[in-house]
Length: 314
Length: 314
Image (cartoon, rainbow over the protein chains, first blue to last red):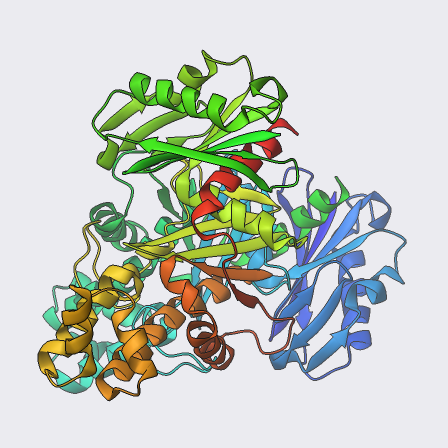
């Protein structure tokens, strides 16, 4: 048994995970961002005990994995910088290790989630890319069955490859980043603009009913045939697909998996992406990259962190 | 000693290479594209004998490496598809092996060149990306000290990542590919357009003197302060830099090396790229990717193929 910890801006989610990557028991506490890493580690330790209680206890755990936002030094188990948690050079792995005498491994949270989805796909792929559509666009790269994160631990920033030179300004300092077009934040912006231009759209009523614009607004209203909603949805899907073409041409991975809440739209999202990529990808003569929707969603981070800790033992 | 073979559209270039990656002796024959792979292999065998003659002979060669254009199946030593050579499923490695009883390893030519530059850099980097600015924009990726080329052998097509959605049409089927802006072909096109718009530019005289527009036209005339030439040069460099930002954000490699004939411009090309990338890259808190100019140029393919054959023995 392993334990996976998904350290988020809002919650610390912890799960006991079987050797095969099955989530056995889960619990969480609020992160209360701004606290010291020692306080956070204390809560993590409590949660570790809680999720293993009754299923063998902490003694049955071979290793603990932590997925943390921000820049992570996996080798030394340190959160180098995580702005939204106000953590700076926090030796979190060592701090958790103080509670239990077992190995603690740390990864960036997006990489941990990618690894979780990779394990869940149960393919023997050497190469795999995970693209999460959320507040931003996250990425995770598996090469030779291992998490690849560059020489400094912060690689795989798929969301910050340029999709449009001189395009929209991004917080990162670049312009035209993929996530400025393909994140759910971008979709919400695109939806708002369309509603403003088309006040008679069904989307206006949807917003009134639901209180606010969300990533689902255009997708749901498009099902009713609302033409403005259809246009928002299809344009957004096209943006997502444009980035996938680059990912495929650069990596030719065996599998690309698309995650994040919006990926629950399933085939409505997936099929036009596949169609667009098939037309645009460089590869005309060899085996082609498969594209799928994520399987684990919210649990990917926990399972991935646990499985990365397992892989690190081997 | 190893032998490296760089199979090009025009020439078959073969070199004897020391265990440390030093080119000892070189010879070439015209490819005469369109011939069968058996005829090409026969010339390769002749050249192998020629370059090893007097320095130990073929008996002193531990392995032969071939870099071939197109889609290459490294595992089986087959050129799956190389349009410019009219080769289809050609078992070139086995054919060369018939002449000498030593291992023959095959790679895509861009990957071989990347590996050559990687070895020449003499860094102990786990991650390295090579970007060649030529007729197109080629790429080569080294991860965990090994050539990475995707699950189907044709990855690392950096030139076919999208830099501009709905941008210029590319032969590959995509639009706005990096190479439509940053290849020397693109630079020549950009130079021609500028000359047309600015007939009084020094570039017009340059073309008269030299007979045709080349990748050097704008760079040389810019040195004389010609404003149209400066604009062409600086815009082109900016295009190159835009793509490097994406490469850095995706891979966070220890080192990016820029090759191709135009890279001989040295610091005039390199310094503004470095400046632009420093401003635009995602990484604000960790060690940063170094960017350098290639060392080997035309010999990279030979040396890289030889050294890849060596690595494949290990």
